[in-house]
Length: 548
Length: 40
Figure 1 (tube, each protein chain N blue to C red):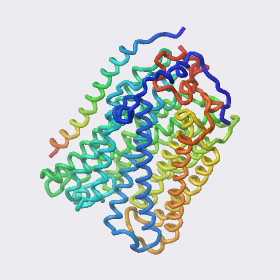
Figure 2 (cartoon, chains in turn blue, cyan):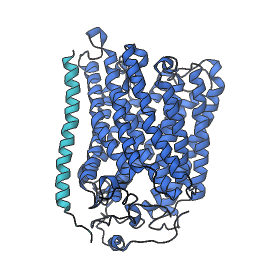
Figure 3 (cartoon, rainbow over the protein chains, first blue to last red):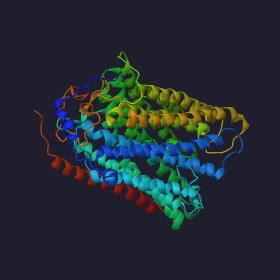
Figure 4 (tube, each protein chain N blue to C red):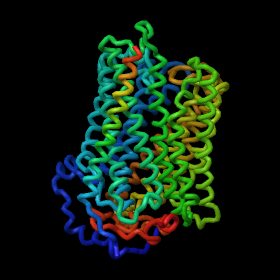
């Protein structure tokens, strides 16, 4: 239950004073366009990602409407391919990644007792690149040659058949990559240099740890994607043959380079989710996180392994058997640290005094449904059976389980968890729960039948299919429409909380919450922790475990 | 008693960290493209 007491900490209530003298910019442009404040930039990132979530979601609705029954009903096949490509690019680079950077901006300085991000001007720049990049990407849909239609992987030679609009796609990917790298540099520079005295690395909240590791992944792999798409650009427009077999190049080399980026990219989207769930479950189980250090090392292990498994996406290209075996076993190894995490979340809940507010419901659904996605990932890791699963709807079901009830549910859990802190108001618990139950049921109606479709042989990225797949596709589409409509409730709950809610949030908000962000006022002052906060067992969750 | 901190010192260290990381990112990009060019 939400903590109704206004439990304040004297030394942190510079906030009450600063509310009146916080030097907050008054003009709209000064406040939002030129802002260097981590909270404002966090809000910009989160609003932007919500808009992209709805844009990408609209594309998903078009895809599911076309697949509602066999035959071609609504859109041309090429436009269908553009939709499936754009849906992925927008959801990955426009919705999920910026949402995590938004959470990082809002929460990391408050969680480690820093006054702001280390590089505030660069922070502004990293955000404001994004709307231009996404506008450029979306504009290709209105060009004569149309948007990219080769899938988000942009495999040549298919992607090289895109017309002149391909240059816009490549430039948009470059800009989004630069934005991500700058965001990652800022996170590392902040966490490594700006922690409050006493906030040692092994006292940091799990969300900060997972983001620190994610930031290293971003810096390691985003330049690889930039290199790959630059080579596509020169192959397309400047006559090179990096990936053109006729000119002595190798299209499979692109796949190797792309997936050396692409697999860590999956972990970039899921590691901060692990962090958020590791914050929420202890709060609502009213117990410390079970195995904090093991969680940190498991996260680092997953990050390391993500660099040596990329070719499991390419089992069908004809690799040597030793290569297939290496990538198969390396991939299966990831189940070990991931299992450590799942068991630790369950152990945290074990015999806890649990309550089931909306953030906890989303977190529990995450643990269960992400694990389903993880298990189907283990099936796909088997090189021998992947020959059947490859490029079928089984793969679509697998990664959507990881990314929707995985990453997106964690984003929603985090939003409900910290929204009262950000706004100073409680959201509607009743509508939050309605949103949760509609989402949790419909997401399974949407994606579970796709396992069966894939096992029966339905290929992915097609607008039409054999009549034998009709029933499961119709069920999946109905689930998709309900899931899509349910997200409007999410938007409504947020708008209500920000503009209409009359129920003030206490500083601690949740009875079992521990961490520096909860000793600030709700909403926190515009500039927080100008004076370093005290780091002890009453202010942070892991103060005693590794005290030196 | 809370230990005080030197924000200016923290920020200048953060700038050094940022330049190192930016150089690493640029190096990875250059290495991949260069390797692909040499492999032609």
